[in-house]
Image 1 (cartoon, rainbow, N blue to C red):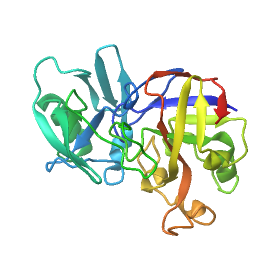
Image 2 (image 1 turned 90 degrees about the vertical axis):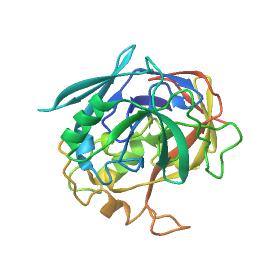
Image 3 (image 1 turned 45 degrees about the horizontal axis):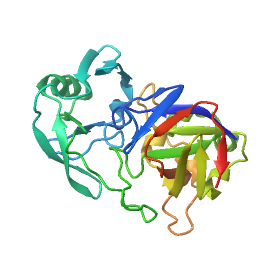
Length: 268
């Protein structure tokens, strides 16, 4: 078994990109979900309510986050504040009072105009601290602006199994994985309690419950019924049948390291 694809999502719920290598720190992949959009109440925004977020592409340079949108131009935001930034108290699900840096008026106007909704961009800076609340989390497990865990793993075989049931196959970007795995059976990742990629150890935090983002075309922002309609026929959670699971949330036990496409996976 090996890593066949690796993805970084610089801004929560905006477009991500494939990368050949990922550096890991305490929060997850370096550069991954270190930015987030918030509304006028400093609550997080996602494609669940703003599908147009899918249309904003992201890129990282040595110093800047680059945002681009077709027919919307581009905007650059420093990865680190050049001067003391205004600190906002923001909310993601059950996490309240997270301290994040406001990224300024220019990018707020650009994003608000394109999304047709008032918003601001915030950054995980020096004061940001977010402990993981998952039952399988341990002291010292912190993470970025992701929903519940710093990483999500999905196998090629699981996606192939789903696509065989659909009238039209779906690309992997519908599911926003951190890693895609080749060389295992469908849904084998559901059974991995602990595993190693390269020199980095991971612990399963439980299945990834899927939401309407999976039904959103990441190139057009159009929303349909698949894959949730089909997944609901065979991937409902036993504990809560309202949950539809696909992929596994995982926590990195090794808080620094490097992962590359092609790295082997060893079960522990």
